[in-house]
Amino acid sequence: MPRATGPQRLSARSAILSTLLGAHPGQATPAGILAIAAELGLGESAVRVALTRMVAGGDLERVDGLYRLSDRLVERQRRQDASIHPGLRKWNGCWRLVVVSVPADDAGARNATRAALAGARFGELREGVWTRPANLDVILDDDPAVAGRVTLFDAEPDEPAVELADRLFGPTRWAERAEELIASLDGAVELRDRFEVAAQVVRHIMRDPLLPEPLLPTPWPGARIRTGYERFRDEFGAHVARVLDRAHG
Image 1 (cartoon, rainbow, N blue to C red):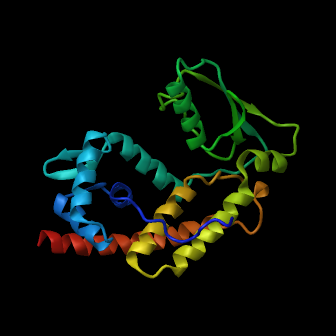
Image 2 (tube, rainbow, N blue to C red; image 1 turned 120 degrees about the vertical axis):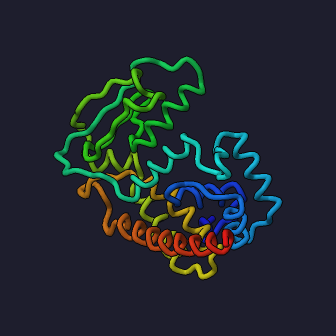
């Protein structure tokens, strides 16, 4: 069955998170959040319930009359911003190899390690062994899920690099989905539809394996999907500023 490419209706929680993750700083007054949510077609009661649960769940903090992103989500915002403007370097054919040398104590810790390495754009070669081309500056020491538990090596695989990258990262599938999302974002007219497609777009950008050009299929839509998202983010940010001015006026 073909994958749906249209907007997927966001919950109140997802809409609030998407709005604050795209804002700098990631905070707003209750009145501002309610006003923006109304623009997106969300009911006040659903938004208030979502805010209460998000504070209880550690997604948001309530400080000085503002809802703001928790430290955990500020870090997610940092990763999101870095995905839009990734710091890539020239690739010399070398790969970074990560070996989990200190096993996790439980399933939760194992899952956290896997999530951290996948978030750092590594592909799993086998259980406990992850790798990626060495064209991306990766710092793992700051992440408690992997700090002190992994050993890093530089390596060059015997397997052709294009085949290894395709097996680990599926760049062709990523590109196909990116093209669908670009078309959906270009075709969406209503604010709510554009917002919901943009939320899918930014999640997809964060899954970009950030491979060096020789390992990418052509044409590669990475730059175009980022440009489309940034255009929407700028437009939505300006709209949010106007809504907040009215809400606080």
